[in-house]
Length: 455
Image (cartoon, rainbow, N blue to C red; front, side, top):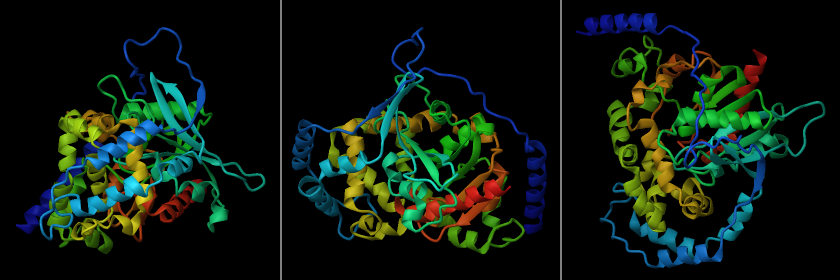
């Protein structure tokens, strides 16, 4: 039987490579209008306007009243985080949120970096743009677009930005100094939500490409995880000549022959190009590659189908919003945190940082519009989208964090990204890499950029 399986796998591999090839095709750039009503005949206002985060006393008082009226169901004995967010620990979070968390102080932290807005395809797009405080003589900063995912936001990058824009002051090499641009995905935080159906990752990629052009960057590096990795990948597929390099810490490689070899990997590791570290990160296979994905993807099925329904509840209840989002920051950071009464949240993050993300969603009322991004990208024919079948022909770097939701071996990544120049097994960290391990990610980005520029 094993001989037949091997022969079938080999034949399938030959057929796959024969028909897939390495054609350097690009996505059509196209255009769009996502604002309300018909597209105006007048040219769009392309001005870039300064923006500041602000919150009124009325908003805060309303929040506090809602927290005070919370109704929680007691957790089952010894359930920890296996049933979702443990309500006993949630009471502690709510107590701190109501009486200890200083949102005004966090607003000042948010405004530490320069914020801007500009109209693109009918939407007010929010972004932060951070330039190096000083540059070595004769050097220019490298423009770097960094894109977040769900349920995160631009704030995830606040601790990595100084390591990239001012590395020497933080004990890192200043061989590469960056100018960082972090936009908010439309419908997330301070970026306006689409009024029309269909704003997916490709449309968002085009909008962010237009943003970079508007800022004067004809060539730039791009980095992202979660939705950010797909959006940055789409930019590379739309305009490869404008992307000097693409660095991701998550890869959408479902359409990949090598996934069919998964259960043969432990027996024929070298034959299929798996390393010992790959097997460690994917074992036990049933748990890591099947059960854990089923366990962690319930939210996705809801958001891919009926995001507005659950959005009504989350947009009305700050407590529900916090539980829904913070549960992801627990188990997506480390699946073993399910075994802890507090979900391990404060092992990697501070409550101030976590509640800042919740407050960005709450004060902007964008949880529903952020969830719609799943419907637009995966609610119809996810695997048949053209970009899913296309390869990426720009230099690529991949950071494999050990606690990511699913490990993606180098062999798999190379099928989608044939110009992979850097693949790193990271020492620690999970899904929210920039937020959780900013120094590790910054070092890997610099390593990747160094390899690109030495080619």
